[in-house]
Amino acid sequence: MAVQKKARTAKPVIARELALEDFEEQALDALGSVPGITLVLKTGEKVTIPHPMLVDDERQEVIERVQSGKDLDVRTVEATDEDGNVLTDADGNAISVEVPGDTIDGKPAGAFSKRLALAILGEDDYATFAAGGGKSGHVVLAWRTLTEGMDPKASN
Image 1 (spheres, rainbow, N blue to C red):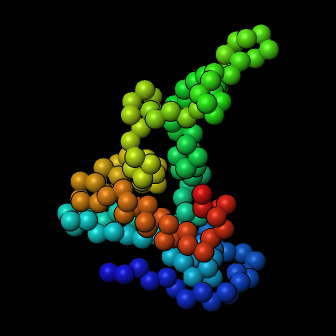
Image 2: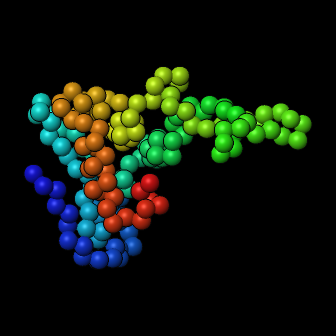
């Protein structure tokens, strides 16, 4: 089943008072978007990837940490020049810098797409999704489909 976005009608939301659900529906309609994409798994269960503007604040913080790499452990390395020589300060001490590692809490971080899918769905829904034949790439593809046409600063 193809995901069809609504034709953009560019209708402004003009009511002065709206219930949140009505506001969400009208705003998404004005953007030509939908509140989420529901995928039917091989088990018959359904998992919904929400529109990025409709996730709760706590989930959005987790998603942004993954997207920025701040979910990764930080490791300290010696700074080097282009030739691989260790840089030193005026006293001759090696200069250290912190860089994102490839671990989370000391364990291998795994693929970015899986970390992002986990952040979007949460652990329980991701476990259901994966057990039903879903791949992290499906979640990321749905997420990107939902962010199409949005301001990149709002969806990254």
